[in-house]
Length: 150
Image (cartoon, rainbow, N blue to C red; front, side, top):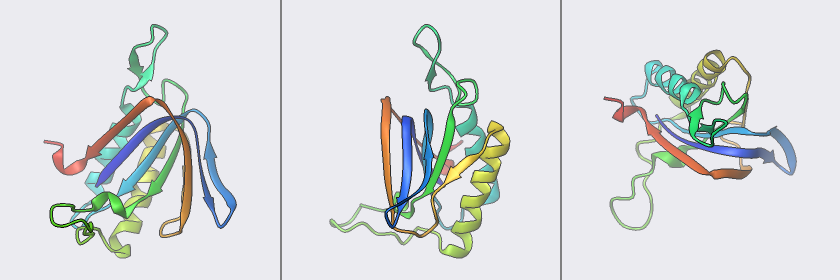
């Protein structure tokens, strides 16, 4: 699984012109699931997300987690994170997991993150045409791949 985590001042997801989810200060998380990913990947990434110290303390040092900063969470599934760009100019999504694996692992990540962070995770809609809006704070953007955890 691969995540793009952005520290935001605000973020939202709109579907068919209707606001679906929105958060204030917190983390906007894009979630990509690849073939071969497991529940262990979802658990590990959720723990890393909840504990990652990317919010400023009183001295302006990134030393607080989203939990310590009392931030909100918004997670959106994004299969394009699995893109391979090695050949040519058209990305290949052959590594992307199909719905039968991707949906349960996305949901598993969100539920594990809720548990680890002790707060709700707002979500997009898996497979929907979503318009995502965010105001990146910093900017702070972190990429985490569960296959690179060791």
